[in-house]
View 1 (spheres, helix red, strand yellow):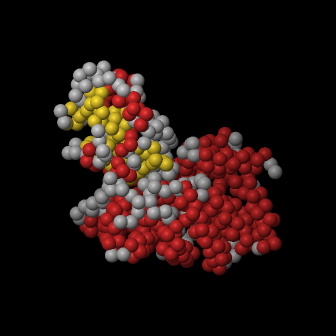
View 2: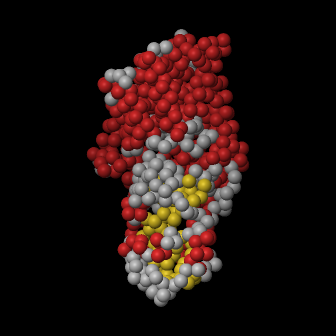
Length: 592
């Protein structure tokens, strides 16, 4: 074993640790690994920068723009609302229609915006039909994964595996080459969810009132300042209430009207009513404080927070949000987004207090209070998915047909082999921009740059694995261990290893790491690499047993009020089922 191999394996181990640790964002981890590869001289500068010009990176970026253009037309929302009406007729009919629709859409456009659109639609449908969101959102996420595995552009991992194959001298994977195995997964996956999966999901009833949903009443109370209060004449940050009792003042009402000035700028006056957030112990201290009268509330409702100026909103922190890894305090949340965070649902736990210094993650659900004038601005913010009623703008058909035509042309030209998928995707984006079907600003804003930097940083690590012989060393070990059982066993193990890794780290990073090993294993066995690459591609996407292995699972984690073990209970058997199907059918569909 050479020094270069030892260094590369060490960097591989470091990458896995950092991805699993999650204290550093995945894109930053990729850049750290890239920098170390260059510093140690393992790869040349041109190889280190090749990830930025790689066809997978470019194609994935273009697909973000195509997906955003379709999302902006409202066509997906219109289809979603139409299918959601079936819940009024029959729950299982409605769920089947939604899963099939989401699967079809996810085969051709990025599934993250699809899930973002369908979350509020299904929350509304669930409330109207009396069904818990927890029983709707997990099938939604899983269906988007099923559909994405059916085509080359359905998920970034398929594009990435195809790109790695080309770099290693193999033929590119074609648009519909994934379809035979993908459709088997799709049919079995939907059947499993309808017969077994949904019934295993805990029925966590959702409340119409956001304050009830976030259990806010036991932490909120209204107090009134009396004439002898020492806080009179003081600005809120300097008042005794904040400095001594450390309570959080959310609102100030004066003469029955809410003061709309920023809280730090308000000077307190006698008879002001303050809405404060604190625990039971602090409420006891408030009762003993001179100059304060506690106003009795049997229960606060959403109406107590909402009027013609203010509104309560539930939002999900979107994947690749700038808030990932930051806290409410360090991100200067209130100033940046013009909204006050009242509670956070993080990793299956509800936090009403003490969350301002807690690092936020994608998928966290946040209860926000904001002025109505800032609502539209928040809805457009790429950092959030707002859980509100979906409205479909007029003229959807007029605007959606040209966009659908462009996407169909991209798929057709790539599927028929007229143009490489990268070229057709770039041309499609240019057509959308030139014909003003999407603005250049919206196109740039739609690109999830952190995903592109992740790809650009990890692709050189895959190159290093191949060039140094580290991939050959790992592959040889696998082949020696399983040589007595033939190539079918190696395919099964590669699928299993990929599936296990993608449950705890980025699916794209997993694909980059495993694809060179898969190709080398095939070369060592003297067989076609295609079944091995397909095992990596399907396994890297089919992540069901954790909420962090795939972006759509992360998105539904908080708002669905799931716990980590919910995914293990429902997704674990599905992961096992897909592994058995892949081990059986991949060698048949993609022969050695």
